[in-house]
Amino acid sequence: MQRRHFLHCSACASAATLVGCGGPDPLPIEDSGPGLDAPAFDAGADVGQPDAGGPDSGPDAGPTCDDAFAGGTMLSVVPFVGNERTLEVSLGQGWDGRLYTDLSSVPEEPVVPNERFYIRTLDPDRLDRAAAWRIEVEGLADAATLTLDDVLMPGVRDMGLHVLECSGNGGPSFGLMSAARWGGVPVMEVLDGLSIDPEATAVEVRGFDDHSVPSAGGHSTPGAAWIFTFEQLAAAGAFFATEMNGMPLPNDHGAPLRLYVPGWYGCSCIKWVNSLRFVDATEPATDQMREFAGRTHQPREATLAVDFLPAIMDQSAMPVRVEKWRVDGEIVYRVYGILWGGSTPSDELILGWGGPNQQLVETCPPQTMNAMWTVWQTAWRPATTGEFSLRMRIEDDSIPTNRLDTGYYARAVDVDEV
Ligand SMILES: Nc1nc2c(c(=O)[nH]1)N[C@H]1C(S)=C(S)[C@@H](COP(=O)(O)O)O[C@H]1N2
Ligand SMILES: [Mo]
Image (cartoon, rainbow, N blue to C red; front, side, top):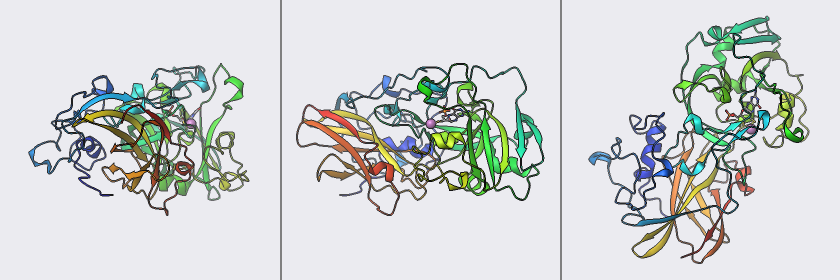
């Protein structure tokens, strides 16, 4: 297995610039771009990536991909078996309100526009938006009421590109996962402005969570709150977000203020934040932490907040789109996917499709940071027709990939022609 022309393939140029590896951002992030509505059915040398004209596509861009698809024709997109919901309209109400992002467009558009960003729990109908927003400081601290101006005092700034995944993102409904550029204020700066008692070790961040329509079957329990030690917040670079993709935070995503904890699952990223309660190590875990204990892979015996592990996303990967191509009279499948999460990420990523069948995929830019997802792709030539489960694996065994290794992110495709 060779690692050829990594960093230079055209599909990678936009992702590279988006994570800041390749000069100015060629994609205005508000622009929804051509996405899959305008697929490159007849690809020329550039394989139809929409970033032509970007800084990496000029004559000085160095060698381009020795592309397995150059001169070929894309015949179709091969649907995943047991296809996920990708409606991109909000469904349900209140706690059960959902919008599933169509992940197949991530290779063209790694930053998801606000109106397509996944939603888990819609804007609470009982939230009074006419009243001034207040954040109560409670517990082991001098009681105070913060207004948005207090919280924002040090100044809202760019907090970078980050992927968010619901811990309940899972087949067949992959799509509770998106990435955006966030703006806000680091949590630790806000805490620095408060008088916190010396015995406090952690803070419970609570959000408004009152909806008139209960969750069907009691699936979601009321009360959105997560407890973090100060060290956890500092280490993750947690921030209070007020902007998303250069726009004010949308109501469904927690306006006017949400917590964002880079690298942690979405369930810890409390929306509509209205209370900061300081606690010590005797504090029990919140209802929300218990509701999501299984999905955030907590030890069974965890009852106190301090017994909970950081709800981080281990490094994971999944195919997001499979295309069928004809190149030089031969059928070749083009598999695109994403790679994200982990604190010591590796880009040695392997696609397996049953038995001993496996090959290294091209990941670029190398996933040296865990904040944003990375796009990978590979030319896949299954030997026979039939249904195949495409399963990713990280080569380096020292990297924790428990969820990935259970087959959680495997996607099946039906190959009708080889
Ligand atoms: N107040 C409140 N915050 C919340 C939730 C909620 O139900 N209420 N859901 C959490 C869950 S489970 C997820 S995955 C993320 C989803 O954020 P998004 O809808 O902006 O994508 O918000 C989190 N914050
Ligand atoms: Mo979630």
